Length: 237
Image 1 (tube, rainbow, N blue to C red):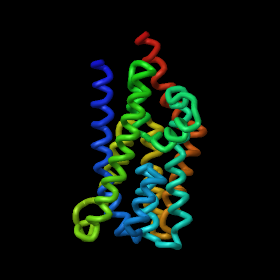
Image 2: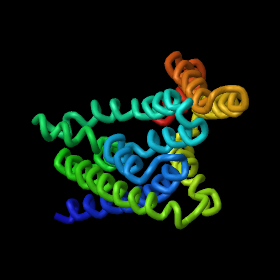
Image 3: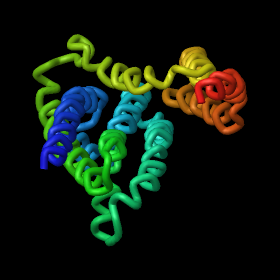
């Protein structure tokens, strides 16, 4: 029973912390040109924070002309959820409606809490508590942010425009431990920054993402990391 309470505590804690970003998303979405209902529907249907921030960031910069790039950027970031779905398939279990509901709440947070548990039953509990908690909280705070958008004025003056970047940096930072990860991160940033003045909004991010995918696919720099860590691993065993 104590383990289940701990899972509840962990899942709800993650849900509360993650939901806070919904306020910034709601305010930024309204500022980028969406109305309140469009903002809320986007959170209900898309429901993956990174993709949502990417969409409104590109759309807000380029308007309707940048809509294809906005959709492509959001879809590219959402691809990771497919991998999460395959990882969580055995935890979720069988059943059409169960899997349909699970598909909507299979996100970074629900997957992270689930895979950190010691048993399958605790993993299942962590997944649903976190996923549903974030879904409910995120949509409530999205509405609040959209309603407060006009009252707050320019989101940049409150620093809300930096919330998404801070969240992405927090996710990226722990992974910068190997040469390939550092090189890919630096190269992607340089490419995106260099192309931003000359390309349509959203396209520099897509080009940088393609570079990262190619490097990761062929594992060009990863081989050096493996070779350098090999002797140390052998000694430690």
